[in-house]
Length: 356
Image (cartoon, rainbow, N blue to C red; front, side, top):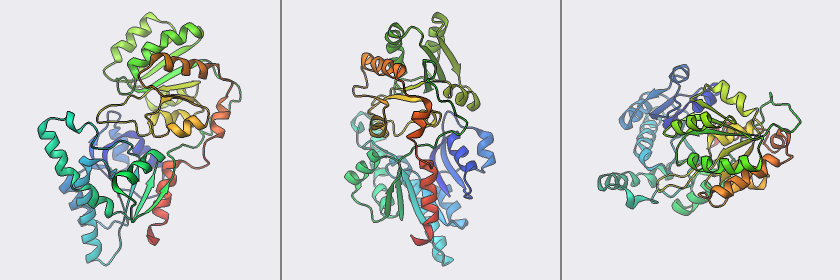
């Protein structure tokens, strides 16, 4: 059983690709939530008591809780752990409790900016975090940033731990060997935290240096009107509002560069960035900031990582350099692992559950 705090389409797609029988309980829905896919995998919504009750009434071999440092999810995670272990004790069975961890921001950061009621609620929820951490049997870390943060805040776990970078495998349908057209793509929420306004400021600089460059903007959010206005005035810009997944993958496979200049926020940091993973899978060069947990890997493998996340000129320079790069999609794909990182983490957790 997997507990998700916020469920999204990519979670259900991964389950459908897996050969592991998985039940999903979630608390909230992401903006890209696909109800049809959720129904296909049998996902259901459950709060703190609902998670406890489900775990108490159903046999569970492996319980994967939500991110341990996601403070608001800690009471729900602990309730599921207690329910599962009560049932396992009564039936003389064993349940293995595991977690996949990618959090790279201290939950106390930005605490003082919250309203009093929210601070009090967070203090209560934080009381459950260490109890959850000590209840784990196995932990797979998706990024080195996450592993370092957990070690610093919670100390070494008694659980068996392994770092499995959250990298995709190459899309087998991408077979081109030449250099792609100079297309920069933004994918995701048109918001400040994803760096969308910064990209719009950088684009004129990019276009002046590379007149043939084109910009594709895919997503939805507060900046949708700005995106459409830019496309109206600039023929080199294409906008797709909330496009279907098939179109997203098609356009990524044509793009040379994926831009995701994530910004630091008091209560949020880019853990990985699904657009980064999906673009790497299809052979795109990545230009992002040091906020993502994959920043170190990206920098080591020839992608653009901007040190100052709020500098439009630095972002433009990184985009220009990537557009002028002679690296091909084949070069990008050759750097990827032979096994999908998230799927490999799940296989490691499940395959070793009996020995936990």
